[in-house]
Length: 295
Ligand code: 3HC
Image 1: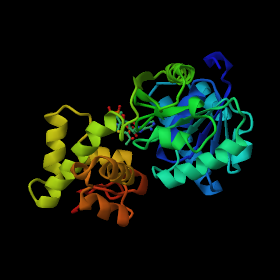
Image 2: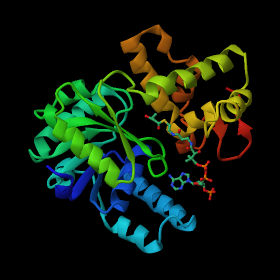
Image 3: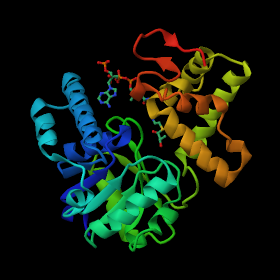
Image 4: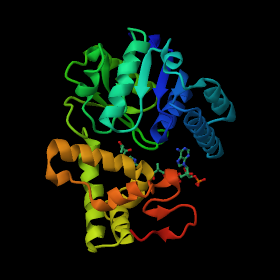
């Protein structure tokens, strides 16, 4: 399949990544079927797209007519078969846990047309293992966006062991149509490239605070003003979702060893449901605006 043959794209999962990916795909002119397992989740995702498009209009990045046209291209679904029946590409952005993703791919294989290419937005999990659940490992690859998708330029395009060159070409071309810069990752190793570098940084920052060697504010100030990253390490954890970072580290710990053991500070935030911006609080409080919370 050539990029010009792609008309409709399904995005599975309407959470912080899924809704942003659906928004970017719709802005690029494709028909989008946004699907989540409950009506409430998919409606929340759609509302976040409306909010984000409104912001882009406010910031003068797009015209109101573009925002309206993008929204018109997005339909919302709960039934998987209905969402994928006529799509050329599926981008899967369900929670970052192997068992959940495998269940989705087993159902998806039965529901999607044979020609459809599957792209997983996994942050760390083995693309080869996920592809193994399907009958189309050659039409399966990683397509890893960054948070927030509407602002971040990079897309990692990851080859599984059996991914065909044609699939990698198609998904790279799709990323370009979305205005992104695709970078091919030839080896399917845990965390790929960005998260292999970034997750230990965020974990080490948490270990320092856990040990009392630095405060959240000290770490974030030095990350921003010393390392030149756009956000401090804890601000970024809140942006990405502390649960996402934690699951990435858990998997890297299992696969790569002790150096990646997640700091208990991350685990306790996940247990308390303080996952970052999306829940109103994480390392920082976004509702009262009172600054860093005591871990
Ligand atoms: N859509 C539209 N507008 C948005 C938005 C979205 N999704 N998210 C934030 N905004 C708005 C804000 O509400 C704010 O609006 P306001 O001024 O009216 O309050 C405005 O954008 C802020 O924009 P600015 O350009 O002024 O802000 P910045 O220059 O600080 O840019 C940023 C924001 C692009 C998020 C920047 O801080 C950044 O690049 N941060 C780092 C993000 C990053 O590294 N992401 C990758 C993480 S790793 C990952 O995702 C991998 C995963 O697998 C774990």
